[in-house]
Length: 183
Image (cartoon, rainbow, N blue to C red; front, side):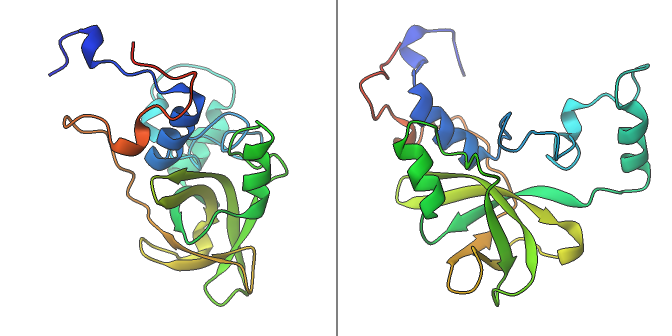
């Protein structure tokens, strides 16, 4: 149990936060949270109050909930490699979000467009990504897709989003740059 001790806190820096965010499936403003996606598509159901009185967008959200009308859902992926467009952004200090709208996600044969990859991060020896997938594509946990089309990067949809347990921080989350240090 956390006992409010500074010895138990770890400052992970921006790089560590980005890795944790993508691995945990947390949407980011400007990446997964934009005017193109609504909170239900970002799977932020627990962040919305469906009972509260009037607020901007209430009717739209209520309609989407009632008729299960979301066209796409934020999902997590395990990739075989880091897409080049995400590498370039990380090298330019822009983080791991592809600011150009993301890489296209295609069905496993590289044909049908099923979504868009919006964020990517190297977490330990694995590459994880977040992206929106069309609900009509009927993909489920374990479905194989191709990032970037035929000849692109193979990936597996890994929908369950992990939560940090009480066993401490995973090794990949430890500080990896000079700006990170224990508190």
